[in-house]
Image (cartoon, rainbow, N blue to C red; front, side, top):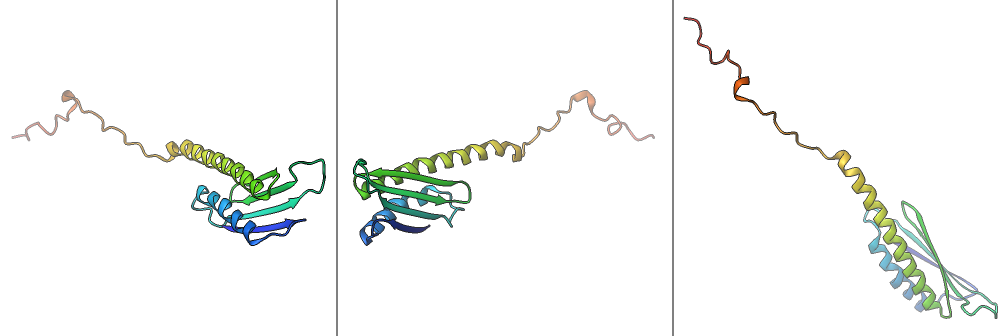
Length: 136
């Protein structure tokens, strides 16, 4: 997983980066194994408006081989905003995995090979030519 952290109106410190890496790294284990080249972008911003109580915003975008997953959360603390966004993404990834599993389960019967039972031979249906004596 490749993590890129951007800051808009906020400096990205090592502590913020490591916290984001720890929280968003959990998402990588929920993604399918074949989706190794997942790119995650985290954009941190501060809204400078006194009327907004929760001005710390974390926007996360996850590019997978399937859909693009996005989450935007705001909180009074930047760490809490990252936590909320990571939690929202975990739910989205769970939905993504369930859809894949449902789709795969629906396709499996099409490709499954069923063994057909051998036809039953009745006692009277046997070839009588095999049992007939060769003309003497």
